[in-house]
Image (tube, rainbow, N blue to C red):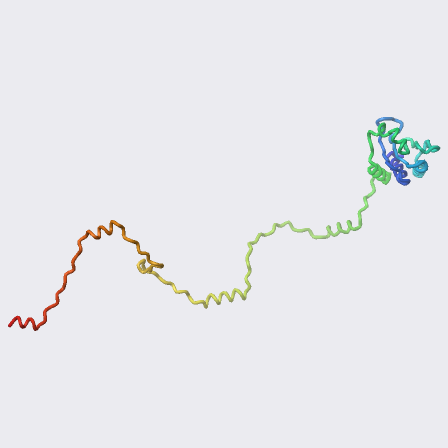
Length: 239
């Protein structure tokens, strides 16, 4: 029997009777007598005997060989010899005293990985050609839909500038409003003289030098116009 299948059967048999602290080690590099060693604990004499019987029956049902079973009289330490694999079923006190893990525990094997590999090797066909893998029904339906669906074109999308569309009624209303609007009066300014100052006028006081110069300048006298003498006075003078 394949060693991977054998170790999986032993682990299943121990788990069926609720064994505690199950460990499996690879001993092929340490001795040529066996390739695997399994250690498990039972809480009582009855449980250790039941664990040994479970391993023996499980291996026999699957075509394995049982070389010997030792220690069933006391039940403190039961050893099951399977040829390529040795199974030690011990009570916690005996296991803590002898410490077999320190002797054989250089290469521990994970229980989950051991069970997975054994199931895979047992399910492989004997022929050279491997059996086709089973595919779930929903996956086959989805793959068929994907194959039937038309392939999308790989054309690049055309970039268009964003334009805001105005409704036709709004555009007509705006055009009529613009046509009927009264034109604004345009004021033309011919020259800068016509521009009127805007705002308040501020009077600036004259400087000191300007006031002194104005005082020194001679004042021009305006000629006094004399009124003409009346005509009667002229006539008297002539007489």
